[in-house]
Amino acid sequence: QVQLQESGPGLVKPSQTLSLTCTVSGGSISSGGYYWSWIRQHPGKGLEWIGYIYYSGSTYYNPSLKSRVTISVDTSKNQFSLKLSSVTAADTAVYYCARGAGSSWYSPDYWGQGTLVTVSS
Amino acid sequence: SSELTQDPAVSVALGQTVRITCQGDSLRSYYASWYQQKPGQAPVLVIYGKNNRPSGIPDRFSGSSSGNTASLTITGAQAEDEADYYCNSRDSSGTGVFGGGTKLTVL
Image (cartoon, rainbow over all chains, first blue to last red):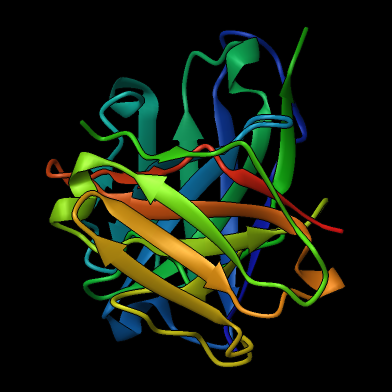
């Protein structure tokens, strides 16, 4: 059973960079065939897809966030990470990491529990 | 358009059948998936592809699609089905998209 766990600071100051890591257990990122995504949910709101990375390092980002987002992978640690720069209060959200398979990459089947990141001074 | 539109709220009597719909241009080209989310929890995939249920999802959940509309049907709704439901697909540019969510109340 694949499990994903987000980790990182719960509080980030405006204009700084939000950094989160997702640790995958029960399966290897390097095995291929899966797309490792970040998705966020603003408090009391719907879901917003941020982007994904493949084990090879290829990425795709939501155009609305592309200028501020970097997703990277560390296969040796079985982790992938999210960096979101120049954050504002509008970036306050629960951030989820998730795994999507093959042609259904945009519909993740395994999700982390989520981590709340608050942007505030 | 990359938007997916859902009714904000739907209610159903216990044991009855309810359909939750999702509209969007991208649904003419790509399948919709459906997620169930309960308060304080991560979303759970309940339907993906043409009409597939992940392991452990009861068979009272089913999906269908016609034109630009996808539907999630719960046949014989149970109290534990009360949750928010989100449709999900992708757009032509390769971006994953979610609907705004439907709050299902089981009466």
